[in-house]
Length: 162
Image (tube, rainbow, N blue to C red; front, side, top):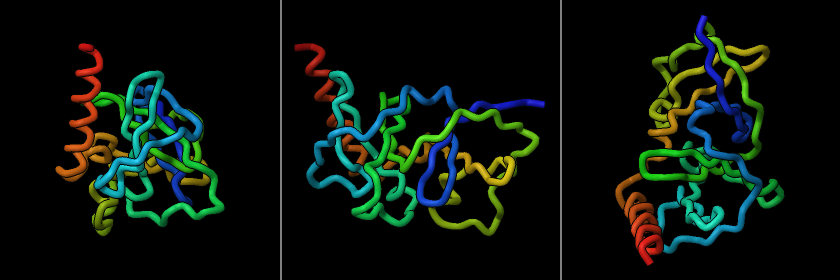
């Protein structure tokens, strides 16, 4: 029996999980600076203790309904990747759960669209399905959005040299 620790979070009516080792930290809503001409998935940039981090709206990335004006501000799940940290905007942070690999099912063949690309499968937990998000694919953005992230990295490198 193999267990996996997953950091869980909510988006709309769904519960998602990502490998806890990918999570750098979780934060309450942060002040964001918009990025002109960026893809809708890029919500903005946040200053994380001097590090500029791109914030991606997972609702938009997964093509879920947008937050309403009465909804609470999104929380940030900061994940580490090859290109540095990125903040994933989520509705609510859940718990770290142990998921038994024996309860994992790959996505069904009839799952289509962006969900097919970004959801690796589901764990059957007590009374719910925990959708396993493929973080690497979720943060892969169209090339014009990647250019914004690359420009951000260049600014950080220049600031480090100065």
